[in-house]
Length: 291
Image 1 (cartoon, rainbow, N blue to C red):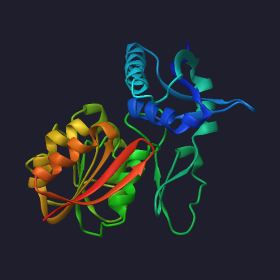
Image 2: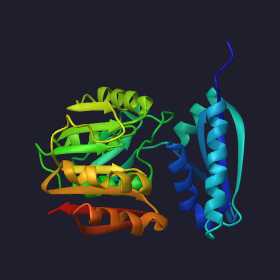
Image 3: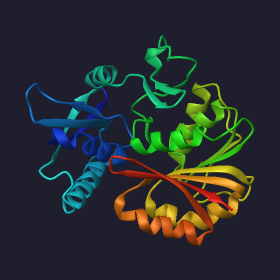
């Protein structure tokens, strides 16, 4: 039987642009990114693997459009994209070489299932997440920023809503801290992946459903965390505010400089008070509070 094929999508950029290159691939693809730099080279190659097929080629075209847009803003100038087919055994070897445990936020690490011997420093928790799935494995700066902000504030018993949950990382981290996590995503595959991740980590969400906006059945929340695009955040600002308890926090991430001011304006119009801003590379994250 022929081995399944993967498609390696690669972005070559100047070494100084390593982080923007990684961020672009992770933002579009939502999978682990490998960074390689040959000795004495002034260039790096950021690569990711997705299952071969029509979807892989569509993702490549999306990357091409996003790169062109960034280059029009003088970001990743001179960077170039390429793609190639890769056999299953080569993909597995690449993932085990590049995908190692990493710190998501204070007190929380992410590790692949083949690293079960890993012991985090101190008394940190571990979330077991494998590469190759859709919607992220916590290696994107936007996820880390949202997790840092959320975990610094939540307490056991708090109701947390993870909006556009993807692989469910933020809801998983909240549940490990004994919060009551509710999560939704409009993509049915994301919901399935998130459910699988809860099972793999022996955790349970209070609810995890397919939805395009905050379900009415969800209770009012002390925290809503939304690591999604600026455009979606703007559209959902009022529904977030309506679902927060008084004094509750909205933690938003996934915002670039282009969408920053419009997003902040939408939150203000929804009655949410600015608390703090955090920046990681190209990305901004925010805390807002309901008066």
